Length: 384
Ligand SMILES: NC(=O)c1ccc[n+]([C@@H]2O[C@H](COP(=O)([O-])OP(=O)(O)OC[C@H]3O[C@@H](n4cnc5c(N)ncnc54)[C@H](OP(=O)(O)O)[C@@H]3O)[C@@H](O)[C@H]2O)c1
Image (cartoon, rainbow, N blue to C red):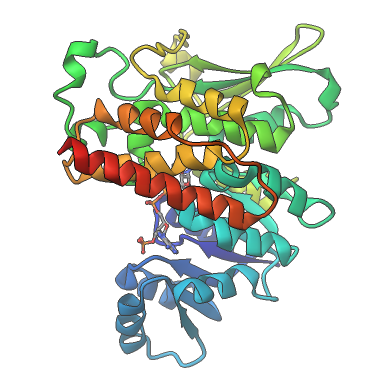
C-alpha cells in the first residue's frame, strides 16, 4: 500500500488525483491533505478518505473546518506550518505537489528534504528554484512529473541515455486565442480566457495557457527536470492536444506519447510509476480524430513564451521574478484591473528593471519573488 499526501487537494489536480486513488484503494491510501481555504470540500474529502492529518493555509478556513469535523482522529493543522506538516509527515511515501503558484515552493522543498517521492504538478516550484530543487533532490526521493507534457517526455525517455537527446519538443494547444488577430486581443475578458479548448483546469493555469506563459513555464520546468539546455527545447502548437510532447534523438528518431487530454492519465502514471494503472477512460480513437496538425507558436502575439527563454538566458533570480510578475499580472487581470494585453507588458517591464542576482539559497529566491511582486504591483497602480 502506497501512502499519499496531497498538497492542493481541493484544486483541479488534487480532485483528479483523489479520483484516481478512489479507483485503486487496494494500492493507495491517503494519509494527508492540504489546501488553501476551501473548508467545505476538504471536509468532504476527510469524510471520504480518512486522512490522519489535514491542513488549511487559511486560519479562518481552519476554524470553520474544526467546527465541521467530528472525527477526533484527524489532526487539523493550519497556516504554512500546517501545510509543511502534511508535506513532511513520516507516514507518507509520496507527496503530490499540486498547490497553485509560488505558495507551493516551500511545502514542496520541505517534502524533498523529508526524502519523499514527489509527483509534481506545481511547475512554479521549478520555475522559481529549479537549480536548488534539483540540488536538494540529489540522493533523496524522485520527482515524477504530472504535467502532461513532462510526463510524455519522461515516458519517451524511458531506457534512453541523456546524451542521445537532440531536443525536447513540448506541444501546446495554443489556447483559446490562437486564431485571434492582435486587434481582437484588447477585448478579451477573464470569462473568454477561462474557456480553454481542451483542458479543464484551475483559474491561474488556464489564464497562463491563454497567454502561453504556461508553455514558457513548462520550458523552464523541462530544462530542470531533464537537465537539457533551454536551447534544445522547442515548442510546437498542436491544437488537438493528443500528442503530449516528443523527444528527438541524435539519430533522427522521434518518440512521442499520445493519449486523450485527461490529467488522470499522467497522474496515475506518476502515482504508480513504473507500473501502469488500468482505468475506465475512453481509449484514444485516432480514426475519429482523423487529423493531427502542427504550427509554430506566434511569439509576436504571445510574447510570454519568449520571456521564459529570456529568463533562462539571464539565469539567477530572473525566472523567480518572471513568475512573481506573472502571478501579480494574472491576478489583476482576473480582478479586471488590467487588460489581457497588459499581462505581458507588466511582466516585461518588471523583468527589464530587475538586476539579476545569483542564487545560493532559497532565501535569495524569496527575496526576488517579493521584489518582483512589489514592482509589478506598483506598475499596475501607476497604469490605473
Ligand atoms: N489543472 C491542470 O490540469 C494542471 C495541469 C498541469 C499542471 N498543473 C499545475 O498544477 C498546479 C495546480 O493547478 P490546479 O489547476 O489544480 O489549480 P487550482 O484548481 O487552482 O487548485 C489549486 C490548489 O492549491 C491550493 N492552494 C492555494 N493556495 C494555497 C496555499 N497557500 N497553501 C495551500 N494550498 C493552497 C488550493 O486550495 P483552495 O481550493 O482551498 O484555495 C487548491 O487546492 C499548478 O501549478 C498548475 O500549473 C495543473
